Amino acid sequence: MGLVIIFSLVTLLSVWGFYRSLMDKNLLGIVFAGGTLAVFGFFTIMTIIYHGFPTAH
Image (cartoon, rainbow, N blue to C red; front, top):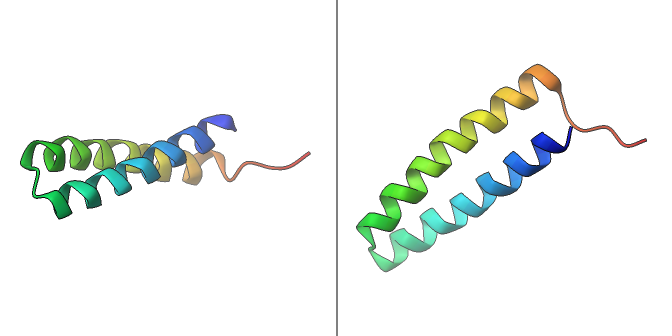
């Protein structure tokens, strides 16, 4: 279940990087942050759908 947490953190950091690149008008940053957001966002959503949220023990 730690995989969901790691994917979520990477997705949140890529959202922040994408937003920051948009504000700085950095085209290469927008491309890489957008790609990271697309890939890890997809992985996060699919992992949550198929394995559920992490449970506390």
